[in-house]
Length: 90
Image 1: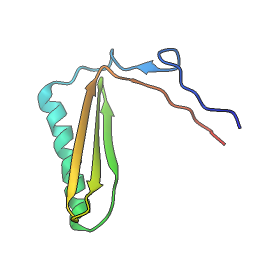
Image 2: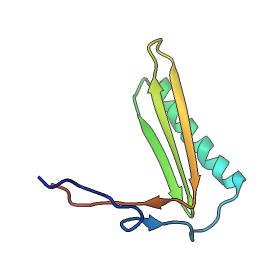
Image 3: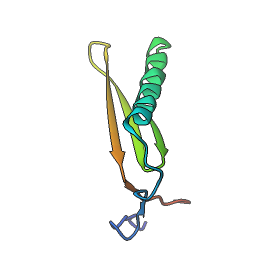
Image 4: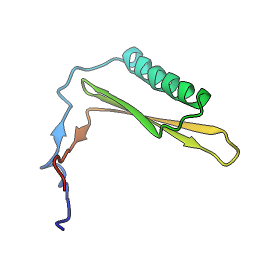
């Protein structure tokens, strides 16, 4: 099997020219992700991550269940990001 490799920056698409979002808009996306996690926690469901990518912004949240049955939510926000995708992997 061939090793899948992403070479930066050649294989990446840059979103730096995407629509520039202000802090208020970014915080709305953060709030949306946190609300999704809170619903999942109340229902007892596990959902490891949610993300929103639009314009030049990528917002990603991670939900981690701790040993004491409490949860940790981590949010990462990045502007002017680059991304690589490989489809049809066998």
